Length: 117
Image (cartoon, rainbow, N blue to C red):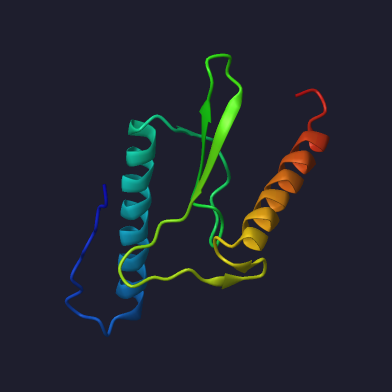
C-alpha cells in the first residue's frame, strides 16, 4: 500500500508559506505511514521527534512480549529525498546506529536526572 499526498502551492514565491506547506505535507505523510504500520500489526515505540531524526520506530513482539522484529522508517513527501546529516545519509546503517545511540544517550541522561524512575 503506497499513499501519495499532493498539495498545490498557489504562490510559490512566498518562502514562509512554502516551508509551512512542506512541513504540513511531511506531517501528513508521517501520519499515513504510522497508520499503515500500526494497522498491519506493528507497535510504534514512543520517541522524541526531531528534524533529521528517525520518523518511525516500530516493533513486532511474540506471544510472550519479546521483540522479534524491528522496523525503522523514514517518510518523505513531494520531491523530498533522504538527506545528509551529522550522522551520515538518512537510512544508511551508519545513520541508523548513530541515531539509535543518540536516542539511548538522551534516554540515559533523562534517567540519571530522575534516579527514582
